[in-house]
Length: 350
Image (cartoon, rainbow, N blue to C red; front, top):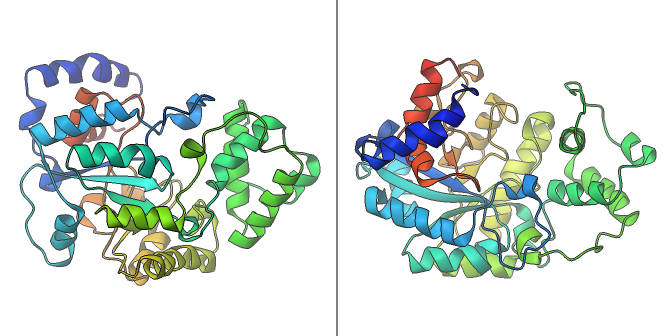
C-alpha cells in the first residue's frame, strides 16, 4: 500500500474527484468524521515541518469546509450526540468536524473561519485548558527543548526504559522514544521531570508563536463554548495511554471529564484517545472510557486493527476519524471520507 499511495494521492483520487465519482460514494455507516489539530497562525515564523504537519493553513481549512458544505451534510455535534444517545438517524452523507488538543490558535485563527462558514466543531481539550495558565503540550515542548540541547545522561536516567525501542536513526525517532519513556511516568512525576529538562535550557530562546505552541486557558475555553463550539475530553496530560498503568489511565480519562465539566458547568459526553491508534491505546482504554461515563469515544484513524478485538465502525467507543494534515488535498479528503481509501487498504491487505 505504501508503494501505491502516492499514485492514489496524486493521480487516481484527483481523477475520480474531477468526474464527481467520489461525491456519489456513501461513507461507511452513512457518515464520516474529519479531524483537525488546529491551524497555522500568521505569526508562526519558526516553522517546524515535522510537528506542523498536523496543522492546516486557515485558507485551506476554509476551502475544505466549503467543499464539505457543497457535497456533504455538515452536522452540529449535538446532532451527532443525539444519534449516539437517542438513536436518531443522521442525514445521509453527514460529516462531523472535530479538532484535537486545544491549541490557542483554535480560538484566535480557526474559530473565525468556522464562524464565517457557519460550521460548529467538536473540540477535544486536555485538563491543561482548565487552568488559568495552560502552557504547552508537554511532548511538543519536549521536542523544542531537545532541539535546543540533547538530553543529558542524568536527565535520561530519570526515565523508564522503552521495551519496544527501535534503532534511533533521526532526531524525530529519538524524540518519540523519549516521549514513550516519559509516558510511563505518572503525570506528577512526568511534570517534575519536564521541570528538570526545562530548567537546564533557555526555553525562551528564539522567537516562537504562542498561538502556535500555547494551549487554551480556561477563560479561552469558555469563549469557545460561548461561541457555540462543543467541548470534549482528551485526557488530563495527553500521554501514550497504552504505556501508563491502569490506575493512571483511569485518572487521565475520568479526571479530564470531571475537570472540564467543573470548568464549563455542563456534561462532557465525548472523548478522544490521545494519538488514537492501535499502537497507543487498546481494549483497556476503551473499557475505561466507557466506565468514565462518556457516550462515545473517537480514534484518530479510519480503521481499527482486528487484533485489537473490535471493529471501529460498530462500536461507539471506537469511532473512526479521517485525520486531516497539512498535505491533505480536497480529492484526498474526499477519498478518505467516502471510505474508498479504507476499502482499498483492506483489499490490498494494508
